[in-house]
Image 1 (cartoon, protein in one colour):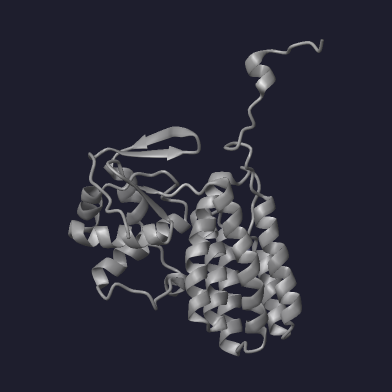
Image 2 (image 1 turned 180 degrees about the vertical axis):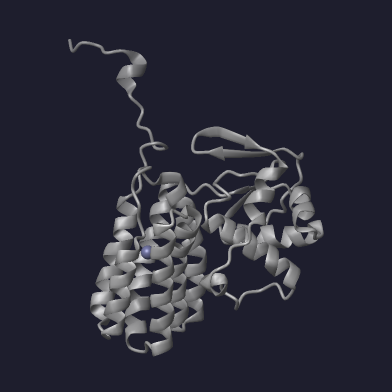
Length: 276
Ligand SMILES: [Zn+2]
């Protein structure tokens, strides 16, 4: 049962971490979702799940990509009426999109306040990456037994795009392509259920990285992705599974949770009482 997002004013406020760090108007969301990303991964979206309505599917895909590219940061408010105007569709269609994003935990609906891009908690963030460390080594182990030349060509082309985006300093594309690489692996493995899980977990990971990654740290690096492709090419499922596990652990290790999980310093609050 989904909560229906409620329209509450036209101001779009983006909150980040512990408080509001930026407030943007209509243009912020319009800009975030209006730039349609092109690339090899239009197809990385799991096309097996659609609304059966091209307009609704299009809105969903643009919002999903905006989340992957960090153009819609955690905490961004998503008023139905503004989105309906931006995408030139009815509010009913916007509600369908928001309900699906809520179901995928990418959007949070707060009664009487409206819908917001989700802000995963520390435990949700670690749960997401723990789930990925269980699922994804299995995906590459299975893929190694059935990998085809066209899979390898697609994966290598994707990694080439990752290097090109990084070299060009195109951060949104770099972030999106890094997340999408994992979706491509799941698609190539040919298990639609796992591909669906990954579709959701990859976007949750993107939100998590945006919230918690150290400013200088970079995770989900193309070098690891290249080594994975090479292991798959060699038909070495165990090596591929090990690389994947280490890679996802490195993503988790790059996260910095200190900002949000502060421990209470009782001494600072109550003063230091000398031992009697
Ligand atoms: Zn990765």
